[in-house]
Length: 281
Length: 91
Image (tube, rainbow over all chains, first blue to last red; front, top):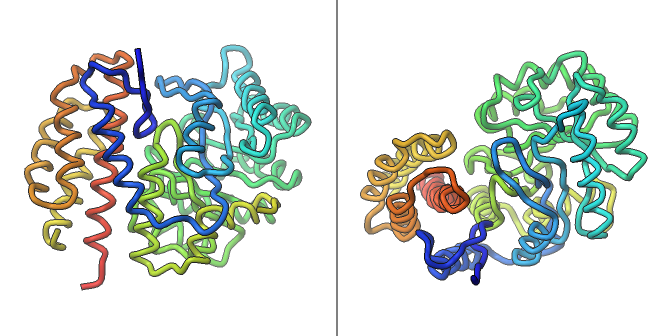
C-alpha cells in the first residue's frame, strides 16, 4: 500500500483523506511563503509517543525537515515521563540518541519534571550531550515560579542552557509567574513556546526589559507574533502537534503584516536560534 | 476577502480550532458554518477540504481518524492565519 505525507501525516490511499489533493493544498500554501534567506532552525519538536497519542520518530521528523528546508530542529521528549521514576530517563535518552543518529540536524534538549529527580535527570542528560531544557508546567503540574522550577532554571542557567517553557494551551495566567521566575533566576534565558498564546500581551509587558526572553512561533497566534520584536522571535512548528507548512505560513504572514525585512525574517527563521544556541550557520 | 469577512472568519474559526483541540463533536457543525462564511474567498478551498474530511471520518480514534483530525486542524489553522492577516492589514 502506497502512502504519502501531507500536513505532517501519513495518508493511505482509499480512506477519507485524498492524499493528492492534500499534497496540492500544502504545496500551494508553501509556495505562498517567500524563500527563507538563510539557515532554518525549528526550535520546537517532540520525539517519542505522548500520553495523548501523538507520536513522531526521528526519521519522520528529518523527512519533514528535508521536505520543508529545515536545517536543524531543537528536539525534546513528548509527554512521556516513563513508568518508573517518571523522570523522563528513557525518553531523554531516546532524544539524545536521535541527535547522535542525525548529526547536525537534531539539537537535543532534555525534559524533566521539577518535582521528580530533576537535578539527577539534568546531570545525566548533560553528560550525554543535552543542549537545553524543556519544561511543561501544564503536563507536569507545576507553577513556573515554584521553588522546584526555579531550581531547575538556575541549574540550566549554570550549565549555559536555554529553557523552553510551554506557554500556550491550558496554561494558567503566565505574566506574574514568569516575572517572578525571571527575577529569581538571574541570567536565565527563557523561550516562551507558542508566543505565550493566551497571555501574550501581559507577558510582553512584564518581559520587556526584564531578562533574556524569546518567543517561539509554534502554534502561535498571528496577532501575538506580529507585535513582537523580530530579534526575539524563533521559528517553531511543534511537531507532531503542529506541522511545518502552516508554521512557515505564520512567519511569512507575520513578516508581511509587521513589515519585517529580509534580515529580520532570516533571524526569525534560524539566525536568532543559532545565536541563542551558540552555533554558527 | 474583505476585512469584514476576515474578522467574521477569524471568530468562527477560533471556535472551530478549540473544538478540534478538545475533540468536541460540535467541531463539525461549526466547521460547516465557517465554510459557508468563507464561500468565495481565497481560503474556501482549505475549508471545503477540511469540511469534507470532517464529514467523512467517524472520529472513532483509530489511526486514520487521528490523522484526519490532525489534517483538519492544519487546514483550519492555515485558513485562520490567512484570515488574521487580512484582518490585521492596514486599511
